[in-house]
Image 1 (spheres, rainbow, N blue to C red):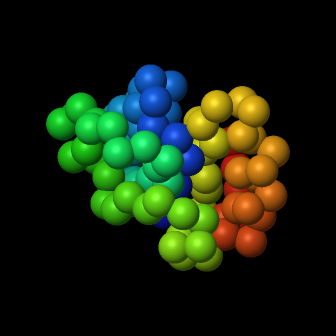
Image 2: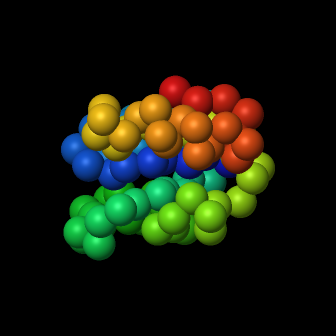
Image 3: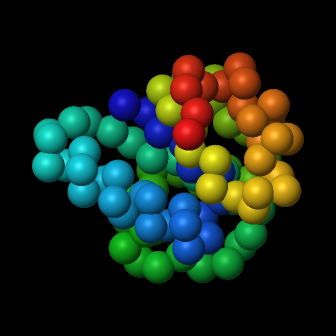
Length: 91
């Protein structure tokens, strides 16, 4: 399963940790990428769960199974529009 997180603040980081736990418990193979607008350092725990980080929509591959929109609410609509052709599902 190929997963994208857009935004890695406290909510995004918490979702990555929880999702990783569930997927590991169920023995589901996965990789997690992140789209970040900040260079703020991540906790080592969260950083270790990421395969790759991107800084723009244009850099993203177009084959994600699911994208989690965890950036600020005011950016959700633009993010959803930009990801429409890059993922099968969004949360």
